[in-house]
Length: 453
Ligand code: C2O
Ligand code: CU
Ligand code: CU
Image (cartoon, rainbow, N blue to C red; front, top):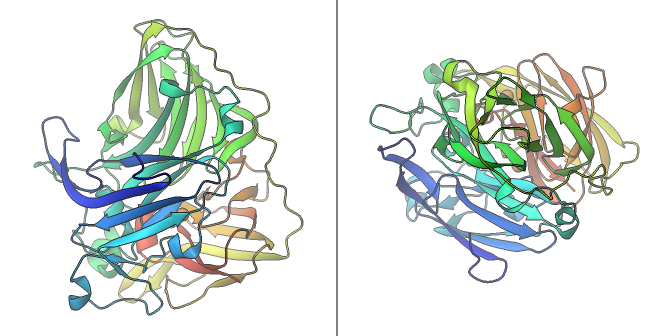
């Protein structure tokens, strides 16, 4: 996306008909008419302003996921950008909410480590259907130090946005409750407690794409932007070899040093930055990116067709980043249980026994404080914290898993698991959130308020 002036962007949210499946037009909710939305590329520490114009038939909210953003621009779920005329006919859920009509300007200081961030809708009770209909895009933050490492770049750096979708016969997106909230629809809700899954896997909006590649190293910048689907990715050649996936980064940027995996699990909203080397694959051969957690066609994600031999001067240096913070002892330890819960009208999802309420402050932390949070899950919950990047300290009382390294903003809690994270609440005062990023769980109440004072 091109800036309209240095550091200034304009995005129009509108309905567009997109050819996702060959020869069929799918009406989607889009940022600027594309799915995913346009990618913004920024430099660390250079503020960016994005003006969003809402031409959709519903209120929207924009959140920059992974952004270290002042609360006023963080996209609180009731800080709505209303379509003109909306407020005349609808009650507003939250007296503290900031409302804009038609357009809203979001300002991002981007005073943070380079990372693959993404922006998406965050409207209270309606985030899941908005994501499903297309409101998601990438925002990449870069800096000189990362570029000097010599990792694969240019056409060999591929951001890959993974989503699953279901389509009706006429090409329209199939979502179980059209423009109604799962949270307030008991009958529908009960059948989608695990979240909404699709049977078509899209990468950057295309079903099972095949990418022509050089026999060289590639940097795959993976984002799972699916509502509820988990993937475990592996790169497999025609003769059944698994290519090593060399992880160089996590949600919040580069690791201290590379870590080699055979497969990489990726929960909703997580990002993995991996380098894979196609040098040993014959020209004409294929490397398939497979999903070990899928069945049938959801076990396939995309493929690379090796088109040519090519020179490769990229490298994966043994030290990637020396500026990872190490935080002192925590001033507090807190515990949060993520679980199924009873709510008015049926079952839902709760944190510490309570469903989301914008009028209630759940946690108050002091700016600059280091805290350890113990997160406990009944079933799979990818838990996301706004504002503050964290490290994983432990899982199930043991050391973190090999893919838990680096700085994160989303942790995939496995069924029955307790994990500990440590963070420092740096940056800004104000009202933020933490929540499950299974988007249906979020809409069904699994979200809480965090006040930084
Ligand atoms: Cu990606 Cu609170 O969200
Ligand atoms: Cu976020
Ligand atoms: Cu969940």
